[in-house]
Image (cartoon, rainbow, N blue to C red):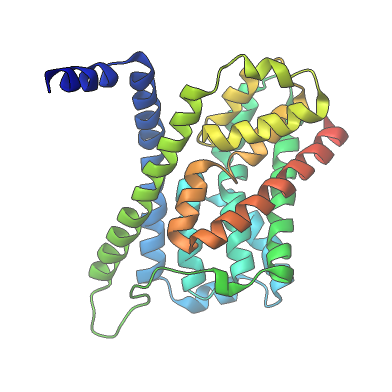
Length: 302
């Protein structure tokens, strides 16, 4: 019995486990403020904003509503953890799912904080900021249109809870209940995603990075996959990309475009909000489109 206890204690104090623990906590702590922001906005939309506001703000034609919603992502200063609950609330309030999903993808990638951090991380490369903006907007718009054409709203399994204001009820109580539900529901999936990202960070040797840096196409695919696994918040990923000096500008662009739209914690959050089947299919297609847009924009601008 004593041997087993000592083995367990030794495992908990192992440097690898300590590193895993630190990364997991860091990702979670980094993301929680934006998750709170997203759930606050989601709860406020649900409790205080009439559904007709959204239908009036967006064009009647869904095909036009998608690029408008994508451009509206500029106004939300948060990461992907904030965009998921907000997009869910928008769908519950009657916004066309294709437009809400376009907003979900664009908000963490083209908001002012992300663009400014990219300019700071690449001080002598203003074209990198422009390339990130264009590739991210193109990806979100294309995904909205693809969902409009091929997607099925039946895949969107929204959480079953009360939505909308009821006559005689307290809007603040409604806001509190909505915030509490969304935060607890999404928070658990955030932790699962953070654990998966931390596991990748600890188990994959850094020497593997050098194997792919010499190939123009493999480097793009590798950094796109790395962005998915590392799950770096979109406000900080430009600095990580800038540090990867052995890779081409296009590969680093792919890292910054794919990461805010598809990473492990985001997939987990989408699975918790919209359903596992949706999250897997949508994330896979988004990754392919994001890589293609990054390669085209990088070839054109970089």
